[in-house]
Image (cartoon, rainbow, N blue to C red; front, top):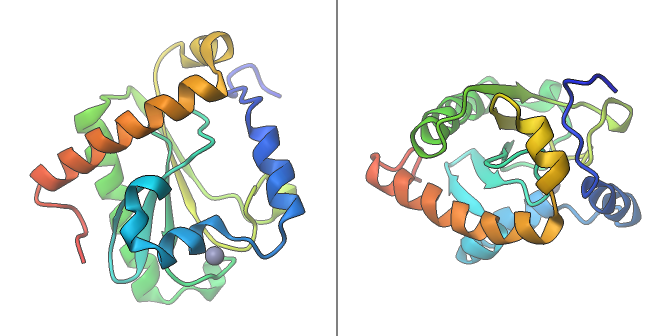
Length: 171
Ligand SMILES: [Zn+2]
């Protein structure tokens, strides 16, 4: 592991959980439960894609953008779907800029478990805000309980900001 990588020990529970529950796709669960947006940390959705806060974040404000269809890779997307997903990536960055003011981002896709995909069967793009020195902060203060509490607060902030700013990508 490179020294610049984030260290996220709480993710091991997620990885073990994902491995043990073949077929249990949390993105599809979110997609099928629009009435439980808060519980599922859904920030918004469009006709083709959904934006959710990662429950097991690499960093504060870590968003996942996924197609509504349960497809595993880029090759299965339609051009329209892919365009919609990328527009949501842009809107996610705009929203995070506004709410959290990060100094940088990691935006990327892990395809396949060997490439680090915790959920290999449902394509998703990670949008991870970064701050100078955040690695040190997270390794000292990164605790599952603290993170999950701030997730609900952050969800409120993001949904509120998204609502004010012409609700990005509202259906
Ligand atoms: Zn799925």
